[in-house]
Length: 273
Image (cartoon, rainbow, N blue to C red):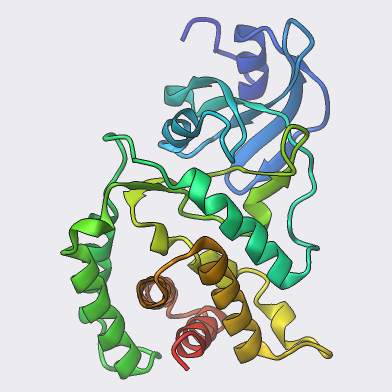
């Protein structure tokens, strides 16, 4: 793209798109975000380092439940987005936050665009990975075998593909907006199954569940799970299956991290008690 070269990548995009900086640069995961204003003075956010398929999901949603995409250069990983507020759901009451997130599912879970990766392919890879784990892996063998079987079944189920899913929807990827109270950002989209969505809401803010005065880890996880399932009208068994698959996949990829392994086992057991 002409005009993009610059020692500062953000500066290069700002110049090419005729934007001016309107605030400090921040990080969102691997991406860099800066408040900007367009040539017409419209407030926006410039994001550099976006996930490869992020623009596809944002175009498909067109602002319905998500930050509106104003401009994109996928080859540069550059997105110009509707500006939202810094406030997320990190401080919201737990069940209330789950209800907000699950309330967005219906707007986000539309027919997927054909360019997106298939969730069934991910499930097949997870099944193979889990099945190949040695018995010495620090995970209960029963859970590993259960998750591998569930992943294999889901990989072969036609309903596993076809619906646009955010993929990483949790307390920190829902921001306050002006035109709507809450809008999602930072999708890691797949052509998938809406029941795939709840797991991140169980694994984020996990440590809070053991704080004094709370309901406890097991009951807190179950409250979250049922708030998500009930609010969104999900099939409980299918949502449970995806939670087990996702958390065991996380653990299998981080076997040296005792905290991740413990969290995965706790979540998988809690949703099945």
